[in-house]
Amino acid sequence: MEQQKENKGPVTVIGLGGAGVKIVSRLTASPHAAHLKLLAVDTDSNILDNSPLNSEQKFLADNKWRQGKGCGGNVLEGQRSISRERASIEDLISDSSLLIVVGGLGGGTATGGVAAFAGIARKLKISSIFIITMPFSMEGHSKRRIAESGIKELLPVADILLYLPNDLLFTCLPGDTPVDKAFEMADNEVARTIIGVSEIISHDNLLAASLADIKEALNKQKSSASIGVGVANSNDGLNRNHIALQRMLDSPLLGGMEKIKEADTVIVSLTGGKDLKIDETKKTLEAFEKFVSPECNLIVGTNTAENYGDQVQITTIAIKFDTQKVKKETPVNMNFGVKKAQIPEEKPKLDSLFGAELEQAELPLQNISRGIFLNTSPINHQGEDLDVPTFQRKGIIIDKG
Ligand SMILES: Nc1nc2c(ncn2[C@@H]2O[C@H](COP(=O)(O)OP(=O)(O)OP(=O)(O)O)[C@@H](O)[C@H]2O)c(=O)[nH]1
Ligand SMILES: [Mg+2]
Image (tube, rainbow, N blue to C red; front, side, top):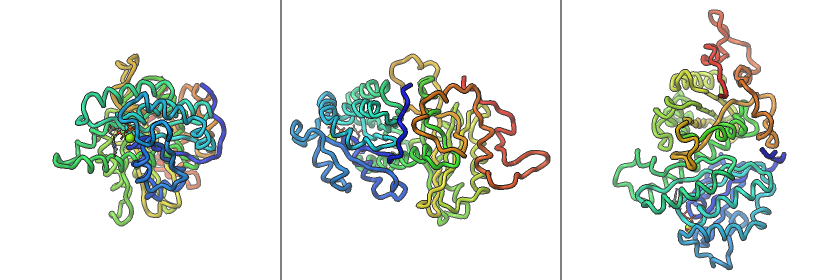
């Protein structure tokens, strides 16, 4: 695997095509996205004009050729439009430490353009994550086929691909919900997912789940995965973490608690403000163990960020490996993957994320608990060190297989 360059630049989030631009536009209102560099790229000038991003954040791809009218669902034109702008796009993202591209597959611009972005990121040695929505079933078979062709192009070149079926949102929406409202909800969920994913791989995590492990699991075999995000603050009740946990379990893109129960690997990341207490963190993460199967590889991470105030966010990614589908060209469901957590003393370096570290046979999970409770005295009860999470006390060994 090619080494990614060391770069202390921003995490750049690019919204590509109509849906992508709308989702990125939602992030402008979130204080939790303040550390992200947001960019909107489209072939449609109307979409860009309607975005609250400022003019430096907007890029109209191939203005002269498409005349700002979008690609009208033509994937080839989407491919050409973005490819023709390679040099300008390189300039836009060259300072990035990580690139997150978000878009809705099914139209021309994003479906055609995503692979070009992956290629540009590779050339610049910037790690890339693609957070992609799949069309609603109501949009018809042809949109789905277009979207699947986009996934097929993207899979071999993206570092990480996470695709979210818009349909999952319907499971919790009343039947008479207007389409616009459904899209709006999808936008909000995806925007939350972007923040959650960027938190998980954040550089100053006390316990950062490493991007290398996500990548490793993805390379190992194709998998299906679900993402849940829950947010709460102290106005919601005394136990904000548990409320956030419940909201995460109810979040539409997760697709129900079963997804966590069935998962082979689950990563759970808790982010809060500077007042996030060790004991509430510990209780929440231990409570989480009840949801997973004993064989599950459970990875936990906590993170504090000043702009969270009294808010907490729990992000969960539940992955189920599907050995039947390993050899298929396209996966059936969303893709994502994770494995161990990073030891907290050292910040993860992007240049080492895809390197030789992937070769370790057994994961040093024992170190994780020392990270959470680094500067506190150990709590012993009946000869057991309660600072060590139960799943570790039970001696569950994670084999990378
Ligand atoms: N979440 C969300 N998804 C949307 C929205 N609008 C469209 N989509 C989804 O995104 C897919 C692609 O639509 P667009 O983003 O408009 O397409 P595009 O990439 O701009 O491509 P062209 O318009 O053909 O150039 C659709 O099939 C929908 O599934 C939206 O407002 N929010
Ligand atoms: Mg469009």
